[in-house]
Image (spheres, rainbow, N blue to C red):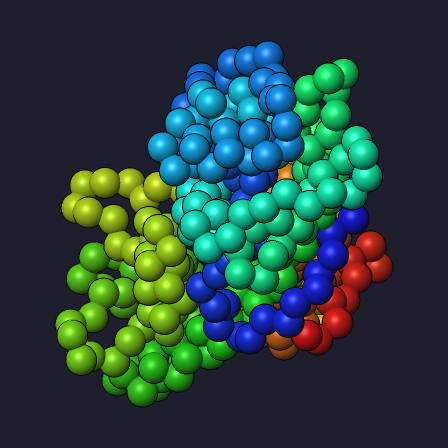
Length: 330
């Protein structure tokens, strides 16, 4: 199992991702090509020289030729899908921009070259290797490192989003208390408000109006291409991952939480606390760890394994037993 590297510190409000490393961009190129080529497994293309391999890649990226990209990287490219189509599309655009800025191959030895792209000359972990008398991209050699970097970035983003959720709930509680005629302050039981109401952490506001507690985060997500926000009348909200993770509000806590087991909801109002669980959309690809947090702001993590989707869906309480490990403050 890949071991993600969390090498970057993120602020409370997750910044718009810019310039993923070249290796990560190549991985999402492969993901896009899988979808466009209907999951075919073409025979991998070989080239006369490393420079010819680079030229073919640049041409395919600029033309948006996904079948050509699938042929360039070969059948192993299916293992590089992240599970987050928005992140994949954004990284593809960033990689194309990096290629416009700079693209070259650098010799490692007589049988290996490295692709470097962008103004900072990011090296790709997918080398160009000699295969007989020709050259090809060794996609399999770069899979683990690509996964590690993608997972590390997704997990950092998710930890920061968990902490942003804590702040958003406190802001909601404060606003609810100020607006309540009877002084009853409550926490939000859902992320997106019902149209025309303010019963979630996000609601649409007129220009110049006070933003909702999660307004900044939702606006940022929408700018990146995520379809978050209030659904159109009659439409069911579409469930999709954000930076490779799904999120669910927890309305109770278990015996290992401070104060013991109890529900946060009393007489239909969530007033006794709040919590959140975040789990990877595609375990082992978009993320490995599942995260939980409550109103105390302490984020815990646990690897739920290949059955993460099923196990996380069954979790309804914030219950950090000893198998959950505290995430150190960034």
